[in-house]
Length: 313
Length: 194
Image (cartoon, rainbow over all chains, first blue to last red; front, side):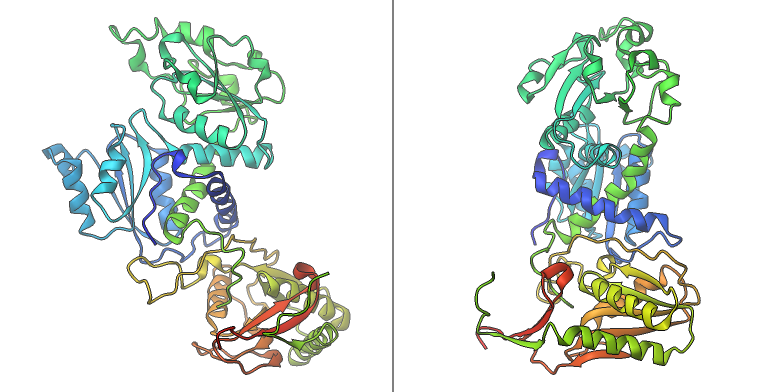
């Protein structure tokens, strides 16, 4: 079986995505029982390389691997040879000496995962590369939607609001949401809207006038760096919050709010929504574990569901 | 209607024989575990779960108690999770979609009757026992199978057997059940090149 990477959502077909979501669902009972571990990937080695800060992605990948009984090795940029100037290629060659089955990597540069993949026998899973892609976030978003809004996401209207320009989450989500038949509208200040993004088949709006049309409101984090002098993206966080921040008064009943975290209270999301049980934010974190277990599992066992084979041992 | 039966298929248990065989197994279970209120039936997905349901219904009817029942999916416990670099050593089989493991009762101290359709190498049962023990510590585990076709690769022995059926390794046993295949029958499928 040739190795299989997950670098971008378009590495997956719709059938692959649905298989991953079904597989993630089958891990839920495991996560509810007393012994929250299965022996499936016993003896496999999974390396987590996080060249950028991360709490939920790195912790959920680590725990997912452990729940599947794999051995994990977690490396961060600080304190590693990267600080001494080792190139990604050399890091890949070094780590490959341990024959890992999967390398999960977050990296500040788009395309870093391809470089890694070219230099290792291990399957590479992208845990976020620069402004390019964050496919596992998209899959867990889809999982949360399916668990809370019903299995059929076809025709659902999603508004993705915020800093689209710098967001790898948005790039993965646009592709994944559309793959499952959702209609995606992007909203944000013109300075943070990538030029030509309409070519991805999305609607682009610059204010919240049509927010009532959304079934799901997906908020992106506004990073403080965007208001630094000289950045020229936003005059102030307060202005952003007044024009694009979402609070309870802007919602109609039934609309569900999502956010990849970490949230900025009072900027893109008001506290009344952040603290409301109706939002899916906590569920997204919960989904991360089951979905990442499914991704690790399928990367190793393959994406064929074997329904037709009916093999008996 | 389906066409004529393929020439390489031989019926070994008919739609009339299967319910009778299951009834006999249910009686044997009660005979072996007299008055055991902790008796519970756990079927192994997919067909073992349907057979487990049928056995459970008979046990409750004949034994006059509401015995517990559950279903087990062993996919995450299989020993053939495709191994890279081991091609040819461990056959790579597609890993199926996992069905729900559903054990809506405490298995601690219970007498568990595992139910499967075909007993062959014993690897499925090994996986099922491992899975079961992640849920608790049963007092005893017994095994009921509709067909025992031989060729064990592990020291596993069934307690209740519907039919002993010596087979060649190239042959296949196909258990079909009303619940998922539309009819009850067990057929022996001879390999075409043999």
